Structures are given as structure tokens and as C-alpha cells.
Amino acid sequence: MIDSAKILQKGPNPIAQIWRFPSLTVNAIQSSSREQAGNIINDTAWAKVTVRLVDGMDPKECMKLLQDHLKKHTPWGLEVDFKVEALNGAWAIEPKGQVFDAAVSSMRKGYEAEPLKIGCGASIPFVKPFADALGGAPVLLIGVEDPYTNAHGENESLLISDLKKACLSQIYLFAELGQQK
Image (cartoon, rainbow, N blue to C red; front, side, top):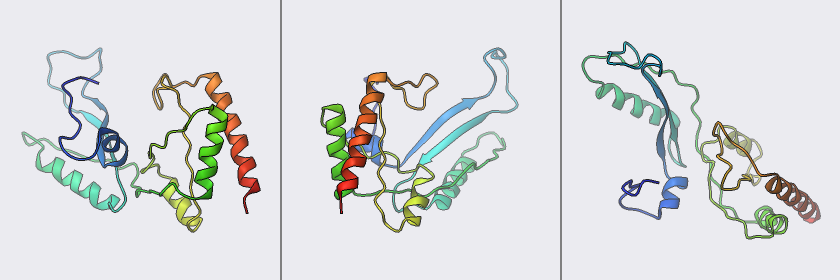
């Protein structure tokens, strides 16, 4: 991270700000290709923007607010068009109870280290519909990563040793869940 970069000036710690707060991310932007880059005025440009919602935020209302803001601040009489790929509500759960205790125990056994609960995934599109359809059954998301994983990057990878630990952890989890009443 750049030393001069600031996340939020006030509020909870930076980890909570990164993982648990709403965010707007520009995932890609293009106005010309690298080959065509020059001292020109481009006739079109595009950006892929995502918004992480949190509990209590309405996806349609957030989209409308974002579109209205961008239209209001579009300079020089230019036109802006939107293509909405998906609108999904946020999901959150308090990681307490037998399933989560079993997950922590199994990860501890498989990795021989204390697992870290980070609370990501609030806007993963399929989680909320599954959670709703299952009528309150606990939803457990486990992301297996090492510091070099580069999750969702073009060079995403996982160390074989961590994959083995993840598989062991899953075996321990299923065994522990199978013994629960």
C-alpha cells in the first residue's frame, strides 16, 4: 500500500473498513487500447464498476443513486449509458454456533494454526438466495488462501501444501458435523 493512501479518516479499524463496509470499486476502465494510445480525443470510454452492499442497503436504490450521481456529474454535455449486469442484496451472518465452532476446530487441526475469521462475501450473489431458501440454516464460507494466492487475479494460485491442509480441514469438518446431533 502507498504510505500516503488513506482508507477512511474516521471509523473502525482499516480491516473492518476494507471487509465489512460498503465500497465502490472501479474494476476496469478503458478509453483506447495501449496500441492506440496517443494525443487524441476518444469517442467512447467504458468502466466496470462494482458496489459492495451491506445489510440494510437496497440494490435497486443504490444503483439508482449511483446512476443519478454519475449523470449529474457527467461533464461537457457528454452522454453516459449503463449496462447493469446484476443486482444482488447483501448477506451477513454472526459466525456463532455448532457449525462455526466445528469449522474453527477443523481448520485448527488441518492447518495446525488458529484460523482467522475475516467476514468477507457480503455481496456474493448466490449466498443470500441459498440462505433464504434454507430457512436460516447456517451458511459457512471458507476461503483457502496463502499470502501469494492473488485471489481473483489473472495469476491466481494456491500452494499445494495449503490445498492439502484445506482438504484435511474439510475431512475434519465433515467428521465433526457428522457427530453433531
